[in-house]
Length: 248
Image (cartoon, rainbow, N blue to C red; front, top):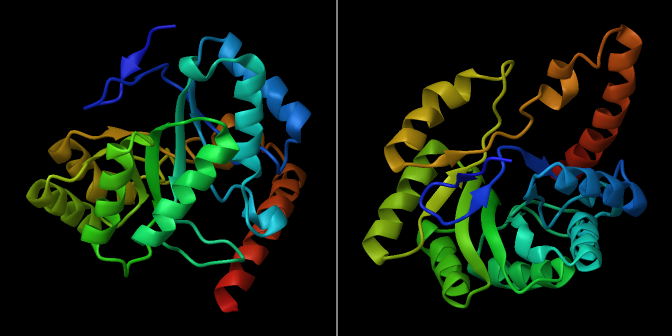
C-alpha cells in the first residue's frame, strides 16, 4: 500500500481514513474488532475517532476510544497506527468546550481510554466560539511539549477562527493546525469549495473530509424509499438526542 505524508508532519498514511464513530454504536466490540482487522490487513493504518463517540448512546461517549484501545492492545500494533481523535464536542454532560481546562482534562482521559502515551493527530472537533483562540492554542502547546500529542488539526471551525488561529500561532510560536476535516462530498460541495479550499491552499493543510460518501448515499446503498427510511430512523434517533441537548 503506497503511503503519503500528512503535510507538515512525518506521519505516513494510507489514503483512506477509517472513521470510528460507529464503534460502540452500530457495531459492538466484536464487530468493531473484525472490521478493524480487515482494515489493517488491507494495508491501511489511519484511524480517526473522537472522545465523545458515541455520546448519543450513553450520554457521554468514550466507547469508540475504548474499543480502539483494546484492539491495539490485543494486536500489539500501536506503532503501526496513525491515530487521530478529537476534543471539544458536546455531550449530555457538557456543551461544546475548547477551553484550556477542558482540553487538558480531556486529552488525559483519551490517552487512558486509547491505552497509549501519545495521540498522533488531535482535532478541535467543534469550536465553542467563545474561548479565546490564544487559550485553546496555549493548551495545545502544553500537551504537544509534554509529548501527549504530536500534531493538531481542525474540524468544525469557522473560516474566520481558522485564520485567527494561524495568526495567533505565528505570533506566539504555538503549534499550527496541519490538517482540516471538513464536511465535504459530491453532494455537499459549496461551503468547502468557496470558503475552505482557499485556506487549505494558503496554509498548506491536508484535507480529510467527513461524510465523504454522504452517509452512504453515494455508495448506491439507498435504492428504494424503504432503504432510505431505514437509514432515516437511525439518523433521526441520533438527531433527536442532539436537539434535546440543545433545548435543555
